[in-house]
Image 1 (cartoon, rainbow, N blue to C red):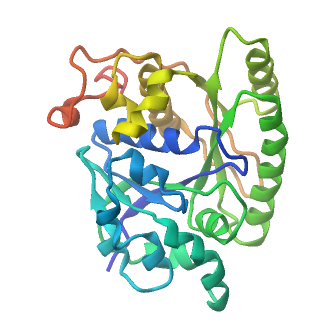
Image 2 (cartoon, rainbow, N blue to C red):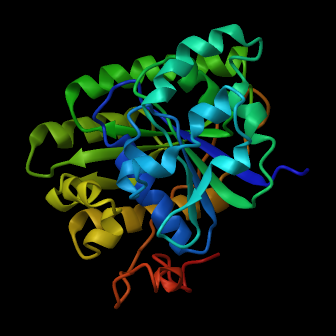
Length: 302
């Protein structure tokens, strides 16, 4: 059967606590709201993406672990969420054992990629939420992806972690997945009142010119509260600063995807510099009207 996963993006950072899972949940929600059928693969044994989308433990009887070790078909692990157009392959603590069990498989570095090839559901975007470590699960995600999206916390130690991650991406690209590209870097937990946040943002934008999104995700209490309610912040509080930022990020993401210039072999990846306005809808999205909510607006879609 034909594989219908159009573009797969690993969301990864070797440093934990950078807003990786939060960004996966809310970016995917906003894209689904733009009528882009989206799938999240929760590849983190902590299962926070699953929890943040309201997937109960009882609904995770078939999850990413069972797919990875060959006990379940990929399609059987896909769950519909409360958000129209957004599905998830959930995770659980048993996935932590996969790191050890995968050692016995010859295709242990490409296990996820081979299982994803069996998918017959039609998704425009697939986001893989990676664990905050460079183990077999993360390498599987990078090998199965077309690109990587890097959330970066606006703090000093995050810069050191980013340099390690760039080195890892380069090694994976040279050894296993030559088509892997950096889709972008998203600055998270940004605080304009903090001089360090400003300094980190300036340094990253200067060094990774063209890769860093113009949209920064601010520190926001409502963003932190939303997962405990099993909802993306876009549903929990549409008008808060965090929601507005993720709406802007989704708008910029789609514009970037359309304006991405494919690089020549072994050449640099080029992006067109853009500025994207993203007016909020008059009516906050709910599970009943979310499919009609578009952060882009008709005038922005190319």
